[in-house]
Every structure is written in C-alpha cells, then in structure tokens.
Image (cartoon, rainbow, N blue to C red; front, side):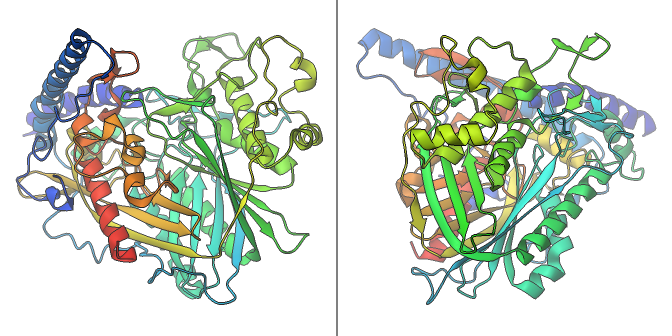
Amino acid sequence: MKKIRIFLSALLCLCLLVGSVSVSFAAASPDVAQEGVSAFDAYNPFANLTVDETQSGSQQALAKFKQIAAKLLNLLSDLVINIAVAKPLSMAVPAAKTVQRYETFDLDGYGGFYAGTETFLTQPAADAVWRLGYSEKSVMPADFGEKPYAKGAYLPDVFCTEMYKDDDGEDEELRVRTIVLDDGSGRGCAAFCAVDAMGLANADVRLIRAALADFAAQNDIVSINVDCTHIHTGIDSQGVWNKPVTHALNNMMQQEIQYGVDRTFLQAVIDGAKDSVMEAYAAMTEGTLWYSSVNIKDYVWDRTAPICVDDTLYKLEFVPDDADATPTLIATFGCHPESASYDWDSYVDENGKKGFDKKLSADFIWYMEKVANAAGYNFIFIQGNVGTVTSGRSRSNDNGLDTDAHSTAVRYGYEMGYLTLGLNMTREERVRLNATTGDRLGIAEYGDREGYTKWYDGLPTVEAVEVKPLLNIAHKQFFCPIDNNVVAILGKTAIADNLMLRSYLGQYYTVTEVGYMELGDTLKVYLSPGETFTELLKGGDGIAGFPYKAIREVLGENVIVFDLMNDAAGYVANDANFVMAGLQYNGNTGKLDSDTWCLISYGRRAGSTFIGNFYELVNEKTGG
C-alpha cells in the first residue's frame, strides 16, 4: 500500500507541476448537476459554427473547415487531458481529510450564506435616502518582510519579502476596501469588500462572514460580499503557487493538513475584512448616488476568441450631504491587473542578477487610488466582466517612454484614475485636476512628445445620472459539478481552499453562489463567482450553442457584471466553446488562436450551471 501511495504521489506531482504552470498561463439547467450526466452530454460543440455571409462560398467553406477541425482537436485534447489522464488520477490519489461526502452534505445548514433583502421593491420607500460608509484596511501579514510569502502569479514557488514602492516612496500595500450601503427602506444593508488578491474560494469568503456573523445580526446586514481585484502580483490566495507538490504529498498521506493558502495571510484577510465592514458601517452617512459610464475601448482588449469585451468603465459616485464628509468613488471595469507581472527574465535586482521579479505589487489598483485620494475621494475598485480581458496600451501615455512591466502598471493605474475622476468634467476642469493632483503622468515633461496622448484630450464629457435610493439584492447557493479533474485534484488534496464534495460514483462537486442586485432603476448587476466570458453577457456569435440567452438580451442593456464575487471559480465559458487546451476560431482574423484558459475552471458545465441558477434567482425575486 505504501508503494502504491508513493507511485500515485509521484504521478500527482508531475500533474501539479504541469497544471499549476498551465493554469497560470492560461439544454443544461441547474439539474444537469445530477449523477450520471457525462461531461460531454447536454451541449452540442458544433452548434456555434459561424461564417461571414459577405465572403465567397470557398472562404465560408474554409472557415467552417477550420472551426470543425478546431472542435475535433479540442474534444480530443479534453479527452486526453481531462478524461484519460486527470480523471483516473483524481479517482486514485488519496483524498485529504477535508473532502466531504456529497450525498450527506447539508447545503441549507452550511454556514455563512446570506440571502440578501427578503423582498424586492419596485419604488423607493417613503422618505428613502442612500446611506454609505467606507473603510479600508491592510491585509499584509504582520510578519511580512521576515517570512517569505508565495507570489500569486505565473510560476509556483516564487517567494517574496518586499513590496514595490510608489512614486512617493511608500510601499505599495495589499488592502481590503469596503463599502456598506443602505437605501433606508428598513430591509437591511449590504457590504462589499474588495481584496487585493487573485481570488478567494467561497469557503474562505464564508470564514469572513463567520467572523462578522454577530455584528451582521445586530446591525441588520443582510448581504456580505467579498470580491477580489484579481491582481497577479500579490500573495497567493488560492494555494496553487505555494509549494503545491509538498502540500499535496503531505495531505495525501493523511498528515496534519498543510493548506496551500497560507493561514497567516488568510487570517490577515479575514481580520482586515471584518474590521473594515465594522468601520464602514459606523461611518455610514446620508447622501446622493450618481452613475455614469464611458467607453474605454483603447484601454482594454480581449485576447481569446470569440472576441467579445465589455469595453466600458462604470462609475458610481457617492456624495454625502455633509459637505465636510469625504465622497466615495466606486469604479468597475473588466481588466486583468497583471501588467506588473510581465517581467520574466528581464527583471534585474539590486545586485544586477536577472530572474523572475520577486517583488509584490498591488498593480494598477494602488495607483488609481493614489489619484482618487489626491482629489479628495475614497476609492474602491470592483472587478468587472473580466473574462480574458487585459489592459490595452494604445492610449496609456507610454509612447516613446522607457517603461518596464511595473511602471506600465503604474501609468495605467494613474490614467484610469484620471479617467474615472474626470468623466463628468470639461477639458478645462480636467486640466486643473491634473495639476492639483500632481500631474502623475508627467504631462508637463512628456506632453509635447510626438505620439504622446494627454489623458484629458478626446475624452467625452458624460452627464451623471442620479440613482434612486433603492437597493434590491439577493443570492443563491447551489452545488456545482467539478468536471475539470485538474481542479478536482487541487481541491481534493487541499492545495486550493474550495470545498470539495465527492459522490459515491466519484463525481466531485463544490458549493458556490450567484447574486443579483438592482440599484434604483438605473443599474442591474450579476454577481458572478468566476471570470465570465463576455458573450454570456452581450451575446453575439459566441453565445451560439449555449442553452440560455445572453444576460442583456433577457434583462436589458443596463446590466453589468461583478466578477470573482464570493468565489474563485475560474473561467466561465459557453459550454459549447469550452476547451482545456486547444484552438478557438477567431472570426475577426479568420485564424485559429491557441486557448488554454479553461484549464482553470470548474469545468464544461460551469457556464450553464451559473447562468441557469442566476436566472432562477432573478425570476424568483422579480417574478420575471
């Protein structure tokens, strides 16, 4: 038996080493999650073949041939990676003591779930008024600088003891930023925390809620939400970069559990979130909420076919009635904060040695906040419809400048901060704002260079819309099948903190949740547990073959997405487009693009499981 364990452990180590690096680069209803349903059932991978009708017959035939060839290759790669290799391994490796039995798991008794407002209103309550409180806290472990922490980035086992310094000589800091919001209707208030981390498993979100349980009950907090800004240069919050092989071996041998997510860091996140919610609640003040948005197509782009991106920056601004109180900016747009992580072999340390960048960074989030604070605002960034969207450089004022990976993140953050602040201003007001906040992008120095773009040129002036004081929010928890056996192994061996449940037939599940929020009649929000591919929001060719209509087709154009909210479920694709490692047809170029993103995903059925449960929740609350 011991030899068998050693053999399986060695095989798992190989899988983890390949998987952790690959993951880093890289009619189905809720009832589909029942036993006996194959990962290849309930979808048609050939249902979404698309052609350009303006092309000639031969060009259309070639496009269809490329798409069919890619689909066949993807089915084969999934079969090899997920079924032939990872499935037997997931069944064979000994489970850590954290794995529970699916059939006997009591979902209703699972602690730490908040259902939201009991009823949904269609009009603000009498004499309703917005109340909002803000707080932010550090989530840096007390022993950071002495004890090395794994970098949640692209390579496992890169340990760091130092943060980057900003332009003012201050260490960048990993933080949790929190708002507590109430509409005065007496139905309770909602808290939103945004943590500077790659992602937090739903099980860890529930630890934060458990720490706040008494306070929430005493103060009628009916919804506690934890988002991650999704930075790729912070402390590993998902466990896969922190000695994954060592921890897996230990946990399979039924030793005392060694979690992939460092418990000192996790406790700092729990404490910081708890303290920030309590402080934000105490700081609640009456005021007005304003909404505006602007297209930022030059600042974000989608790197994965089918190309579809929500290229809009959404801004909520809370203005207190008390002129002496600090206003709060809530900014959201979909973009991976990963620019600071792009130094691979070009990084040179203070000793002149090349290697992987061993400094941690809060990426562009820190610098958006620097600008907002300089203008007199509190600031929180909530990750938007991120999918496979990353930052675009075409208008980031870097033309002709010698910038490395980190400095491009700095400049991107400053510019996005200025765009958010200046959205409702005239050009003259923006010029004054630039000067009074310290000209962070150096327009005085670089502005006359050929090809240099000043952030305040070409930006439209957008009128802000007042949001009625009406907050409707609801959540639904449910079982999600884990069809991706690589993720099953990560959970089964307690490398990742995702709750792992195993059925008698060997199918793995986790518990996750979706949410739905309405802010007045202005904005609707899908609270998504993963990284949602934008075609599920906007539709288009990429939605073909999916068992549900796109969200905006069902609920209207005023719906946005908060991704990575209350879980870290990985990428969420159209079931028919799901591929662990293969090719996707790019209709814009007519070429086949490589695709490995869904190596980090709950699996093929995640998209239909999430959206199906989301629509059930909306229908239940709105009667739609």
